[in-house]
Amino acid sequence: MKILVTGGCGYIGSHTVVDLLNDGLEVVIVDNLVNSKRDVLEKIKKITGKCVTFYEYDLCDMEKLDSIFKKESISAVIHFAGLKAVGESVSIPLKYYQNNLTGTINLLLCMQKYNVKKIIFSSSATVYGNPKTLPIKEDFPLSTTNPYGTTKLMIETILKDLYQSDNSFDIAILRYFNPIGAHKSGLLGEDPNGIPNNLMPYIVKVATGKLPVLNIFGADYKTVDGTGVRDYIHVLDLSYGHMLALKNKKTGLKIYNLGTGKGTSVLELVTMFETVNKVKINKKIVGRREGDIDACYASCSLAERELGFKCRYTLEDMCLDSYNYVKNNN
Image (cartoon, rainbow, N blue to C red; front, side):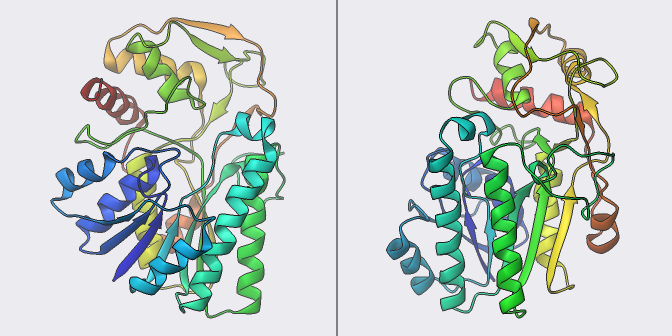
């Protein structure tokens, strides 16, 4: 069985590729390396002892994408590729719409043309907007607060419409909450260029002295300590969720939340990081970011019931593994 992984050199994609290879599956990666690095391929090989077929193509280039499907016998697709920074999407919305939507439509057209009918799509908890109650269930009303989230919601709609027109498709939409952590080998993890958009890489850059201070955006939310509450999930649990979705015998269009079901505030996460790694994080409270909400955490009972999904890693693991990765790769 050969799996096409779009964005397979990225943070979540690379961890999922490792799981696929360790499970004895063949993997083809297509990635334009805009948000990722080529050396990830060597790291994947070092961890698994196996090679992947790699194409440095952009999904928006239909001719090149078609050539992959023509050459490779693809059985299923896991679709991670896309621009993903919330703040940046507010500044350059058209680039996000052009890239994320065009790339996905091209991918689905190729799948249709070459009769590849199974896709797992990397969606996001951002499609729930500002939820009225918690925990968030899959049947909650959908809305978005930024263009990045809107592209995810639009792609979900495209997939639903595609399934409506052809129910021989097998579609899993996975709504992630907040992935953090890194591979236990210390070889794979999240290491964005410049000032990170996500909290954990920001904490780690302050811990290693690459940034002077952690800005905490807002301390006046209606939460346990005034800072935003999110559902942090270990990236290894997230990649495990993809494996379960790939093997799921329930066909059709399925939507699952992937999280821990527990909310953790920014200050709670920082304190845990300091405690388990025995470091001090220099931090200061600054103003809220536009589009941020008070609290967001998942109900994962559907994924547990239908996929057998259950998180195996704790917040301590997430903090230890994140720091270990950056110390190994400084």
